[in-house]
Image 1: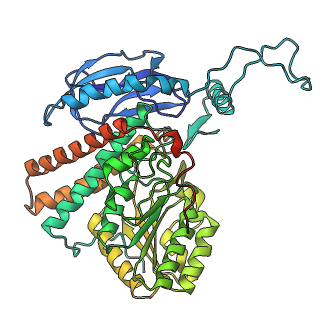
Image 2 (image 1 turned 90 degrees about the horizontal axis):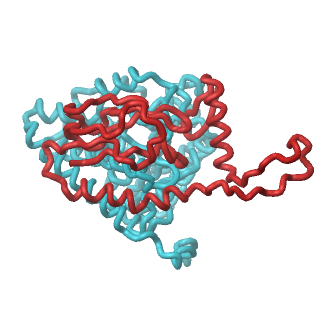
Image 3 (image 1 turned 180 degrees about the vertical axis):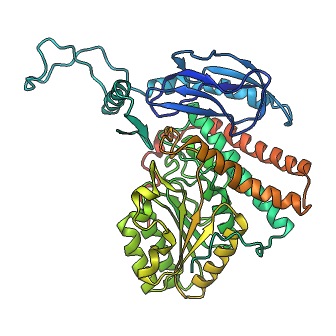
Length: 162
Length: 332
């Protein structure tokens, strides 16, 4: 038995929506087969199987929103391979162990407001300020653009184009 | 010069050779799938560029080499390292940033080397490895050690200026270097037709008197044959050649690439019609060299090597903070 986990498909992804299952319970799958589509903060991506086996359970239903990275989304029973208790027992455990560092890798936007730069007349007085990394700011801005305009998409390595 | 699509029925490979190629290519594919999974679990930092689909290129070229010949490439490099004989454990642990990795967990995919296996990286600057590889070949000539350096780059890097400065000197001095363009048709998200005035990249050496050849990069035996001829030529002092490997990557440029620049149908067609592993499998089965069951046994063996490497890459400790300032300079 192997659990399939919600994957992180970019360095900044923390959760995603499971938009579509491309397999159902009872299906036999093989490595490299696309099993689901997920929507990240940037794009719709395909999830490929790594192990072969039979799908015995889908743990997250189609359309589920905000599925955290490393959440089990399906269960696979091994086929053709020697029963791999080592693998199925190990990986989720390892995932859990690593979950903390993964989460904190992204600096939490601190709620503590930072003094607004006085010199910028564009910012209305009293605007709430957040401290955020450049990377997160870029990411959020790209995501906002993509939500607003479906001609904007991400290609290659986090490059947004129209 | 241009040799059609290299699908020669004349190229022969023995049973042992074909089984070895099957094993080596499968190791790369299973390794990459597992690396993709570890990336998905947040265990690999930064980016992750998978080699799935292009396996025949490195496995075929490696079969044309002699012990001591060097290999240098860019950052889609896991396959090159495995083909060069570096261990799955050491490569995977480097990807997860652990001390059991080839650069002791401090390098990742873009800074991984093995002097022992003559693998010189693993480079993050697009095209820069071409100058470095040319330099390695210059050293070979200077030392008269008879080694040849394989210098790989992609179709995107083929438009970098330093590639042509390197070509000029390599041809002028008849350096023992081989330039191998892995033309997978997309430079990140830009198709070669949209980026290149001359899309037949093997012609790019013409003005330097570097002969070129187009090779079916999905056919491991065709790759090996072209590789042998070119390596022989370079070793005998006749200078560089430019081999254009027509290949295809199945996955995105990196893990976070949804690949909207090509259709799903295109990818599916390539997988169904040109897959390099299926190709060798068919050669083996058709010649009666092994049965489906025997190949399944190889599959199982490979899977266990890869599973073990994933376990090792998660168990190996992170580098100690005291390692922060080590391996930076070398005492000359």
